[in-house]
Length: 150
Length: 201
Image (cartoon, rainbow over all chains, first blue to last red; front, side, top):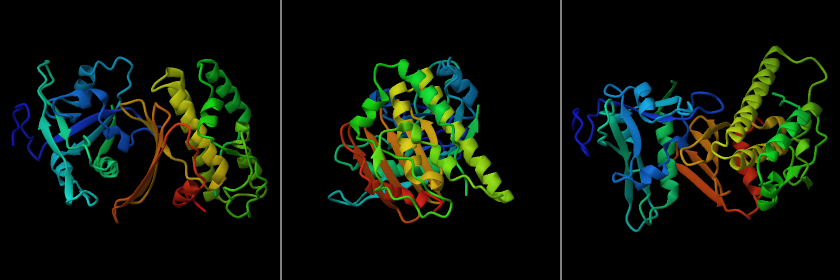
């Protein structure tokens, strides 16, 4: 486990990461679709959803790095890395019982201030895995996220 | 019991203005999913839950009228007034949010209007009993309507390709179900039963 960012290495469990999203009709509310992989995420090497370790890259800085000129990403979803790793979903339908779990790893970004860039892995649906379990997982993520306005 | 906002003329005006902005018509979307809107139902405060099997029409301006028809003629208790106020505010926020999405074309005016159309359908079906959902944009141009009641949740996701995905989940029991409707598939009335746990009936 690493507190110093090394690409692909897991973060320390005590770290807190923030996912940036768009405000909802009720303001700061964590919703399951905030944890869907974007097309960029799916095309990336890690196939992870983009998050920011808050002590290295605060949410406001992350927003600047996202070039959010439209002020669209004004919702922060804060989660402890340990809590993310504790989430499990079991796939019973597959030939052998499988478990979906998540990890949080550093995802190198060489821009100034972007040292805290990381990714939550495990949300990209594997071929043959039922979609239902991935929806369950993103629902669990939304339940543990602490939303705040930026 | 909360009474929903009733300003169909304003909503219709807003809808017409938005429809001018796009080539795709909302009625086309409704036709695509054969999305029925219930005719205005003459219900009273003492009526039982409106049946989803009532005759359908495609008159979108009926949405909200039921709210007015069910408005109490007598005096409401303080708690009822608070609930009515909260429901009005939430519905206004929801409609403003979706109208803003459509204006900004973020995610797309079609998806935003389709979401509004589904919301109106549910309000028509359940009237004052419907607990209003939270709407939120995702990262891929989809809009989600989300209901939560303790560990239970219901998601209706409207994707940019006009697919509608329904997902129900109970985090305590790990029970889950899903149904996906592609463009051209009608919304089965049986799905309304799955929404009932999120009503106040």
